[in-house]
Length: 162
Image (cartoon, rainbow, N blue to C red; front, side, top):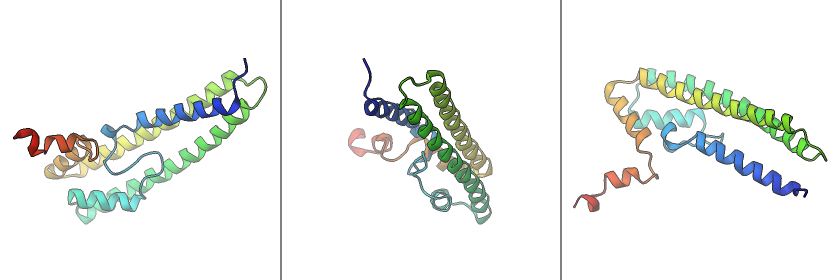
């Protein structure tokens, strides 16, 4: 039985999307900032964090430099992933696709996503090191209690505590 090419591509797309969502879960992302390339620019990211944490000008400049580097790396990774998706689609369009080649492409996408997750973690760690204790506490609240997740509302709701 031959699988319809569109069904196969749709299934792969959904599985890649789910893999990306699972890697960029709310515990490892700053709230209000999406991952996957559709989030705010480095400037908007830094402005929001600076406002939320009360960063000094020096802290803000350092964070902006790091955020721009991360943004550039992410753009390269997204571009490479797009190239790989085209190669996967091309291979799947063949009568007898090379399964090993497709597996290698998928592994490369996984490695790319892992490297970006590490990059994001390194950025958060560098930010934490540059913060005052009070700013670190605010950052931890931002990471642990992302808005729209329901956690913040549950912990701060007067209806639950009486």
